Length: 342
Ligand SMILES: Nc1ncnc2c1ncn2[C@@H]1O[C@H](COP(=O)(O)OP(=O)(O)OP(=O)(O)O)[C@@H](O)[C@H]1O
Ligand SMILES: O=P(O)(O)OC[C@H]1O[C@](O)(CO)[C@@H](O)[C@@H]1O
Ligand SMILES: [Mg+2]
Image 1: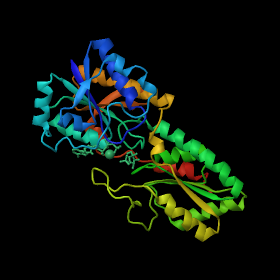
Image 2: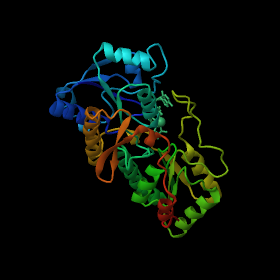
Image 3: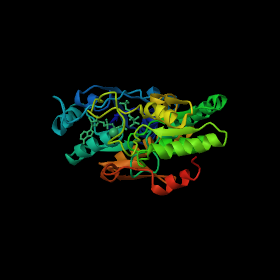
Image 4: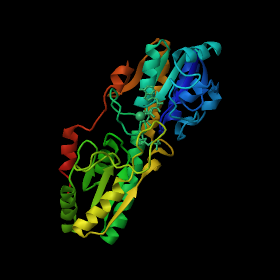
């Protein structure tokens, strides 16, 4: 079989480990051949790909980013877009199946193409951990490690100056990175999109920390909004898929906290640092296993399915099951963390 692999949407540590796992399992177990599409669906629509041999994936599991490149191209648009054009391109090049590695957008596109008859298997990726039907997605653990290290560092400078630090982490719709890094770093408040809060409550937590002689540390997810804000803070325009680019809520909160409490406050926005660099060992293992399992799904003809982590097992589910809803932070997990606020 000749299998095409693509990575689409925002990048994520572990993408290269998936590619390596798939290529190695395919070559070793099935003598499969591989091509890598350039820049996500754009490479499919424009027929831009190159062979991926075993030697191309050597040493790749520790490498951040994606050797294939990524984009937010819509496979239903453009001259070569749409299921008929894509199938023709695949037939002309003898490509039997596609492994699409991406988030809910990429997987939704994959599901629509599969509904139209294309042979695609999905692999879930996102640092946000917001995809349903998988217990964890690779990239999340790495992002939490990076954010936790940043929180640890901010804490020492905060204590030196008796300042309040507001640290912003990623998380467009869900607060998993904030929850886990905040718990790991001993944050005094964790603000997440699922739990709009008022500024008075935040200041109460901050003041109680100060009253104990400590420097308050607040972790906020970029998608958080105060309960009197209509939506998440955005001042950077739109992304390539016309969605507001988030980021900057920490810059709004820090002066509000300072004005209300009198505690000198600083903000830090971690941004894409959380997506860069080498994946953690956990993410390398998870990504490698998902890549290997994607090959099994291809050889089972499980089109329209996605490989997934359930407990410690790798399974397959239908993509439809994964993209319909978000994996949000449950109330019980937030309540548990909240015991330590203030
Ligand atoms: N409903 C849809 N139908 C067809 N194509 C879609 C659909 N939703 C998204 N896409 C395409 O898939 C691309 C990738 O989706 P998106 O940009 O949301 O990234 P993602 O895979 O969800 O990863 P990320 O976690 O970075 O959001 C989009 O830019 C868009 O072109
Ligand atoms: O890479 P971009 O387009 O700036 O996307 C940023 C978004 O992607 C993510 O990193 C992953 O979905 C979000 O946390 C963030 O809002
Ligand atoms: Mg998306």
